[in-house]
Image (tube, rainbow, N blue to C red):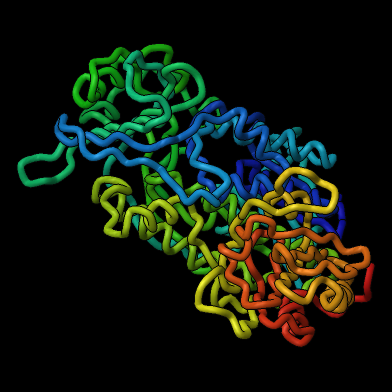
Length: 563
């Protein structure tokens, strides 16, 4: 039987990346099917770090409060080399960044995203596996095997592979996955320890031999709950050769890090280390004597570093581990994948709705593959040189990079134009930073810029004026609405003291504390187009209809208003 919906998107893989794609599509009214071969969510704290950029994305999606209440703050990292404490690394960011770093077990991240997805009437189809697919000019035909063993043929407008390092979608597209593997094997476990290390700090303890080579390492990331940590360490010699007696991953859907496709990455099928194995490493490397207890789960895992030659072809795309795998240093993997999904989903939503420029979806590869290449290279460097603290960059810049706040798309085919922009302040293609101190006519409390963007699922046009008031900006809002088919919303921002004038039905806010002006550095009246993923698509001063039209023409097809 073939189920056809030419306006739908099929997503293979319901981890954090696939769930993000499904939420972003569903909240924009796109019918999507999310399938996963596993019968249930895995109870493993594999990816645990949440970077500030991901929290900003969750803010706009409307789920950040739930995540913050479930997570634990990551304040920094304590580093020890041969038992000697090194300078403490504090994860400090500029005051305008609204969120810090956090730790949240992957199973909790998936739970929060899945519950948020349910608000839009969508769900995961468990026990359902993508077997194969073909595509043509109008859609994708996929063959699924369902939980009952039946086969189902599905027709969709697009297919997104979020199905991990051994991705069937990547293989079906014939994408190359160039890179290599680290020879070492690692142990991973979720345990409780009784030390009194500072709360909220990760611990990285290393041993260097006489030649300065790191030959032993212990990394502990705090988890919610008293004394709980996700610990990782080198696998002891000979340990993988014997029959380990902890829980068996294969019965719960664990993937073999040495799978038949030759990609040595992920949890290894078999039995994980015992608590005694973890204790031996703690006895060797822990900065304080400590006793491990309450083992929740453990595994052996392998690490590869690979990236695809392209992030999609035609109507089929890959995201997350299906596109890039690398060492877990700095918690970059899952967060990069979540941002892949965020970048792709708003473009697919416009394409499914018939409002996208024909080249819009192709910009996903142009924007995200350079990010993936940089992340793979950086994490490999950090993994081989002793962690993020070995980065040669300025510490403040390094922290912004680890927070993924420096990711940008200058030079993207859908970014611009740049007209009369000052050399300071965010440019077209940069992340739209938050700021405080905005005021409205009715609200008596200060607002953040991200408050204005929250729950808006399309582009937002920010029109700033320092002297002329709002009246002259209304025409720009009308232009944006007409050229986007009603898909661009407008907010007017006035400098403190600027005359209000008449803005008609448009919302007007004041930069009461001057924070927007300080951070964005507008030169007189200025146009800022904020994309659905929180990046500036265009910046223009003065804000002309021609500049706005040139930008929108690269994103939107010619559609009637309020289609």
